[in-house]
Image (cartoon, rainbow, N blue to C red):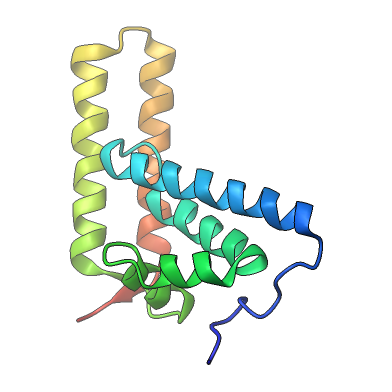
Length: 135
């Protein structure tokens, strides 16, 4: 079986493997929450999960890479191909829609509004800095 980058170093210590599996699962959960809460970045959490699974469980690592929703994004990112234009546009649009809605209708303290806008700017810059996959 051919292994992807990083998956050939499963840790020998079983306690560390278990901790990495728990951390990987937590990161997958945060990535899923990030789909619905644009202030949480989905892709970095999924990449962290992949790194944890690569060091702890080849079975979980393969599951994540072959997942019907997440796998393609992780594989193309790991291969340096980038993120599809549609995914970038959708992510940035949802981030700004959510942040503006929160700033206008939900959040009242000025400092929290500023923090939300700074987060949106940071995530937007990060997403724009990633390579773009042209399909």
